[in-house]
Image (cartoon, rainbow, N blue to C red; front, side):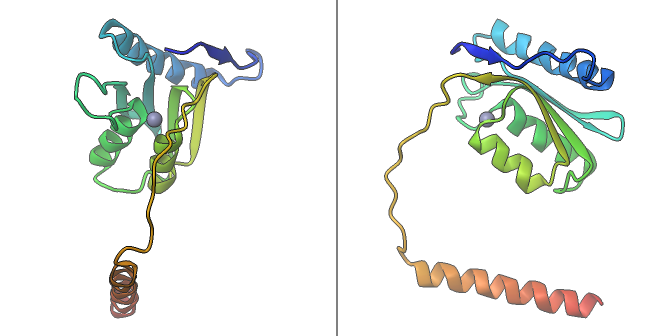
Length: 156
Ligand SMILES: [Zn+2]
């Protein structure tokens, strides 16, 4: 793993509870290291309960999306039986990457606590093409919006 830069350590200000959950995330990161993976761990806390805990497993699962936070978000959603994790807190030993930050935002997670910031965040360069069958794709989105609006009206 690339060298990580450590954030200023504010022992006195950092709530004890954050340190407790972060130490659980660290246990996960150590599991990743033992397995030869990038040592990142994450846990998700919801109303005082751990509802997700995972470590980086992209090699083990042969899945480029198997980041600790992604796995923990899926576990947490399954545990709650809900795609929304509104009052949940994510503890990650490393600052979430763009993909994980996206998942966190989509889940509506209330707060993110992280330990270190990777010094060199890899920004993948991907060739993109846009507008291909764009009209058809947009039409589907509009149909979905209309469906949601009508459903809401029927439920009220
Ligand atoms: Zn990630």
